[in-house]
Length: 255
Ligand SMILES: Nc1ncnc2c1ncn2[C@@H]1O[C@H](COP(=O)(O)OP(=O)(O)OP(=O)(O)O)[C@@H](O)[C@H]1O
Image 1: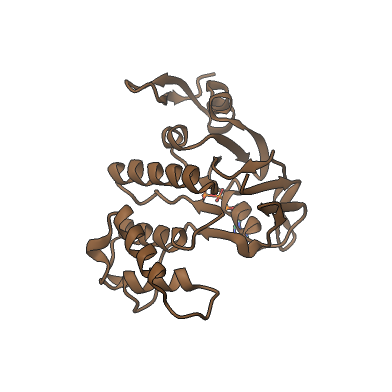
Image 2: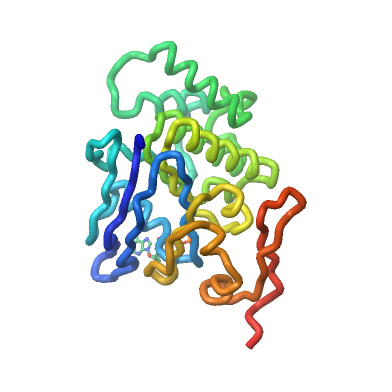
């Protein structure tokens, strides 16, 4: 196993207010994708900021790479807000992200990594546009490129597809899943669309109102009972023609 992440009784406090507590997971291994789901304001982004070392709080975040403990600098984190205020072009910004934290010169493999990622995300055509000239979806794809170009070992993606059209959502989530498998990256992804969760994730961590509901395999966690308990809707899990499970919502909980 290459990279891993494990949380033990992790919490977050802003000032005097506890917004998250008691998050404990099994060992989340490289090559696996864990979806973090839950209602608005449940604490998903706060958890990511805590894992990325941007917030303090109780509990332990254990990050490991090839048997050695990693600091939070080993985490690549893509925040939910991708707004920008810079004159850089797309290409420059992705190259800069690649070199982040180093003072070395640009090498051929840096340029190759940037080219390859722009191509994988199908954004080569906007490579020399200014970041301020992009649409919301384009900005989100560039932010993803800036994160992936750093060769992550532990990758935290906070709603990385929220601004993307359906085709791009499927494409990006398929890319994330295959990168995770090929490079043994340990991925956590916060995402609201449960159908996309069932496509991309191996495991699901559910948070509601700052506490952990459960953490387990997708098929065991996303059930009609969870839809009722956490989202207050009646629904069923069915299969599409390619046998991928899908959530069918019947409506608000009927008592
Ligand atoms: N900087 C902050 N200072 C104080 N409270 C905060 C701060 N950031 C978030 N919160 C509060 O923490 C709680 C959890 O917010 P968080 O952004 O982690 O939720 P989330 O699950 O990511 O929500 P969403 O699905 O809406 O993006 C909310 O009640 C929010 O108001």
